[in-house]
Image (cartoon, rainbow, N blue to C red):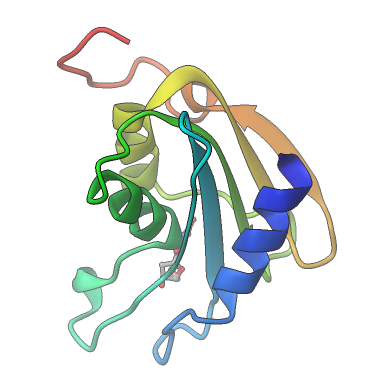
Length: 129
Ligand code: THU
C-alpha cells in the first residue's frame, strides 16, 4: 500500500492550487474499506483560509462516509520528508488510530515512516481510540 499511496499523493500534488506560496503538497489515504482518497493544498487570497493537502484528503473521505482511516502518504517538493502542520496532526488524530502509519516523503524519495501518535503525542481527544 505504501507505494500506491505515495504514487497517488504525487499525482494529487499536480492539482495543488498554490499561487501564493508556490509550495505544492499532495496527500493520499486508504480507508478501512479499501477506498483511496487524495488531496492537494488549496490556497486563498485570504491566506488563513488555505486548506492543507492532508485535510483536503481527510475531509473528502469523511464527507463520503469514510471515518475509519488506515494509512496516509504526504509528499511535497521539500528538502527532506514533508512535515505536516499542527492543525493537520490534530485532524489526523481524529480519524486515524494512534498507531496508524503516515508516510512522509518528497520528490527525491526521502522517506520518513511515522505514526499518528508520534506526530502528535498527548493529543486532545474527546473519544476513546
Ligand atoms: N501545507 C500542506 O498542504 N501540508 C503540509 O503538511 C504543510 C503545509 C501547505 C499549506 C500552504 O498551502 C503551503 O503548504 C505553504 O505553507
